[in-house]
Image (cartoon, rainbow, N blue to C red; front, side, top):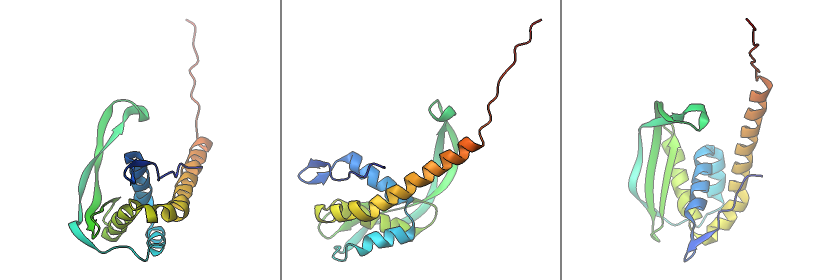
Length: 160
């Protein structure tokens, strides 16, 4: 079961940075329908103003040799980002791969709502848990598919 603990208090009711990183990672992988479902559970969400309206640009993606070795520049990809401030002062940030500005807006709204204790419990127990389970299932399915096509290489020693 994926880790969906998002309510670890950091100070005065604000979430720990690690908890925020976990929910932002999940929200960035969520589909538009999953994000809409989550937003529908918070009908009393405060109004907001843009600090940074949705923008699409390029970011450099790095890889690691063997998955954990030296870094190398893999290439560039498109990324859409935005930042908003709710009327109560809470900031929300959304980053998504691709050009989908509406998804980035939804991620930013949910990021801000997750920082509010009255919404965090509802969102974490329902929509975010479902997103985490879907992502974990997809990872497990990819591992299974990869393992099925694995080829073992061996070298025979030839004596001279």
